[in-house]
Image (cartoon, rainbow, N blue to C red; front, side):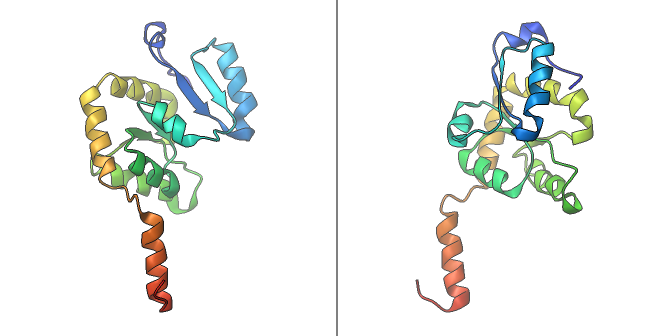
Length: 160
């Protein structure tokens, strides 16, 4: 968390940070120490749909479920894939979107140095945000539950 943002940039942003139960206290101490009142730290966000709707840019890990949600929500995002998952699959997930110009990515090890700068550059580039939203939106399946159920019925021989 070394490279943060300048006081000038703080005046027009708000950050909602879902830190999880394990990191909540550490994040609270970090925020208090640096007087970052523009950051709201949440252990858990019950209404992620509302958080997505409020956000101009999402910074997140790159799990398949999250990517699916962001695709349907058509949100510009910066992925920071977790290095602690089997076979580095989150990097593969993120790269698949980055290659289609549907997302950006910052490696976990590089996040302290580059993440906030990358986020601020994106927030100041509305055409890039629009491009990411359009491209990620093309990847979303709004009727995915029905598609899955129909495929299960086909595989099991049921007509549904």
